[in-house]
Image 1 (tube, rainbow, N blue to C red):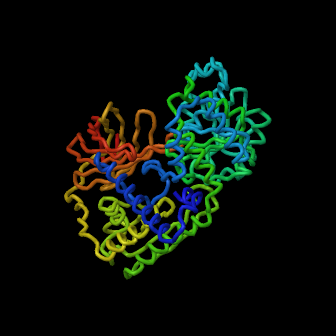
Image 2 (image 1 turned 45 degrees about the horizontal axis):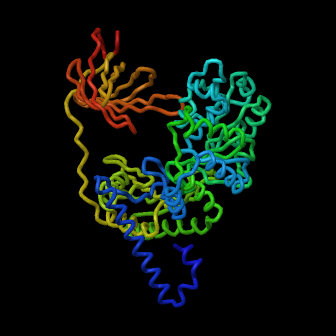
Image 3 (image 1 turned 120 degrees about the vertical axis):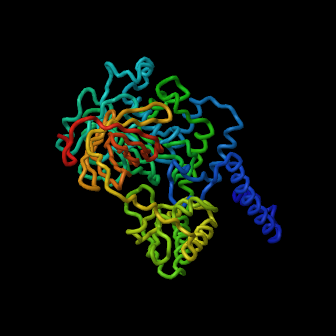
Length: 530
């Protein structure tokens, strides 16, 4: 809209006409927000104010107006997709200073496409063979600090991961089967086993180096990772770049990126399922075009002003302190952060309770973190990240936080701890987990010392130590299983009845599921297996 006004200033001869146009724009924007809210609410979904940051689970960021316009215009015409990506690649190269660029359906898709391209290149026969790697390069090197939940996008192609823990292992890790090196952008990628060091060795072995910079700000002319020697670098389109949520940006060597495009949709290859449409492609290009035009210093100032407003309002409540901190030099998730702190016992609400109330009530607000639990950890904090908040939302957030801190709702006391002698639960238990589809049998070894539990939890493929407690017949224990670059957490809560146990297990992002357990029959003495 501002561009339209700027290009047609001669149409607005008087201040009154211009003011009327501004008023119309504000009303149209408000009506658009109301329509969007009704759209979600019509299917029982409650929109929220994002004071947390760019997380996929809460739909990343909001696209820029220029991105919305580009996606709308792109949807109104047909194009040939290879021609489209060739044109976009050239333009991305001009803007970024990289040799080439393509748009993918997300950063994870870029990882998979590059892995396929490193193995199969543009060879259609090899592309059709994937993920069968017989006779093909089938190893990807990852420095240990780069193992993370997103390297599943590498492993899904079927490769073997070779972890490198220190520079002395680096040279030996390369061989004729090495297809690629994957590095997670962050504190470690400029260290003793960082991109510069790895790229120098990889070049001698003619192996490409991929850097995952999903949540980073976009550095151009030069790109920091390509300047360090990476062959390609990928970004999430729907985070700080504010492009389409279902888009990613891949920059780097032209030959490898064109092979990555061949391995992705619309071509019939492993990456066919990871389709970026013409709308996402042109929307992503618009976001990159805008990145070099945006006033980033002004945006930062606006974020700080939002935090200052929330801090000032919250500190009118006696006992509340506020601190605004600046981010570390890391390029990911760069934004100032506000942390409010108080004594939950004094104000009658903890940080955890405040965060839950903000999320559960209207207007619905998600925050960046909280601490404080009843009854023994009442020192409380609440954190706010501003850079995905829309203009004016800081006033809504400030008013809501102030209202809840100054007049907290009645908080139901925690469930009382069951009384009575602790049930004897030591031993080996066969635990049956009933998922929505499918089931699994795990084995749990419990050691008991009064109310304290320790032991081992074995799943179908992984195992880990556990810890927990017993109160009367109420049993709770937790374990965290290291799986590749991430962890699977299990939080069991149930009731024991002799040699049986029933309850639920919290699986974190995978929800909850019921479990039943049967103790293996063997003689026990003093809570220990004999």
